[in-house]
Image (cartoon, rainbow, N blue to C red; front, side, top):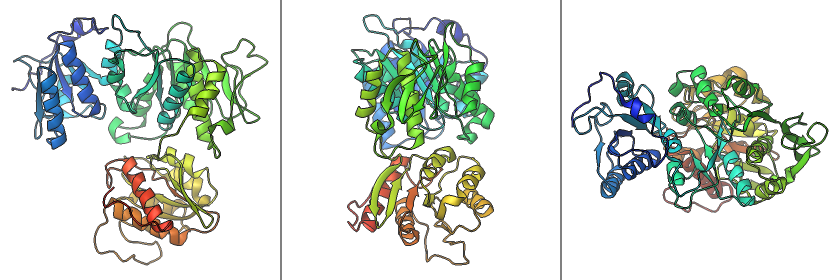
Length: 523
């Protein structure tokens, strides 16, 4: 298969009319970039629509070959794997592609995508494709509630799902969490509402979405390497508000999100609705006397508020950011007509996902907390601010972020810090500058920060490093401390995922702290 010429394309004219499942997709020449969850789902959808599809992925593994075989079984498709498969834009039936659908993690400067952009070929993400095919004759067309933010997306989207279901609506959380969005769109019964979690990557490749309600929960440095800096990251996050129909929900305690709403081009009649963990003003949701209340969606909002739930409905120990996420979810679903009683029931029915401020053990006055999902400084700060005295296990793949504010704002909480990760130089430097008196043990270098070296002959793998970190934390922790594994970094330098990293911490705590021994040869 040859390389397509990069001399321009007339593809956009046909694509303008592709706004429903029943539009003329037949024979459309599409390159799908990536064969992961979203790429596979996109290719499968396009095959069903009758498009002519070529899938490209640089990984040639048993898993990708199995996915390729499955796609070949369901329809006509070419799959190119390994080596230079993702380095050039392939031709399809001897012609230039009319469209590229990319997996969200692929950077704009990736060679195949750069070639498509240079040729004037439109590039969509799987979310853009899902929006285009959501209307289908004979099935209900779901409204979308779109959720983004640096942190709290998954909690908020699953809380919204629970509230919607409590109201008797057929609803699902999809997108950057759990079910791929295209799989939800293709459900035979259809849905009334989809709560859509959107990453900055997915928003970057989207342009047509018009949600019923939308929210950016917060904004802090993350994925600086992918977006080329903070302004690019902010601009992509802000796209969540474009074309919103009923309510743009913003975080009163994160003014950047309100500015995004002010700048957004929304539909006529759309309202700005704030949420705050303090007392709410008019057109906001907030907290009064440990009650979650609504002063936005009631007629008497100028001088009264509707009770939605109590803080205690969220659990026994409720961090402030969890309250904020619940209020954001409530603001979204109230825009969809969900009554107050269903908000409360949805909160009570909600079961949080793992690896987010998860109590693993309590022994000898020390709490052992797993927050492996804290993959950036903003998320780690939310965890650290929930405790007074902390032995902090942190480090990993930094993604180009700055740790200055995180360390400076929490230095007084640190009893000690244990650094995991193959290279935690940036975090270690911030600790030396802004917490110079705090003991720091860097497991990658074996350095204790006190002119001592840990006994270490070889580089530790992820599981070994976590066991070493828990061993050191057990030695350092005292009655009243929390040992908090909130890495403020991605996991991919030592672990396949944050979930694997969290499982390694849990296993180490149970084996070393609780003395149960290790139950798995491999995590």
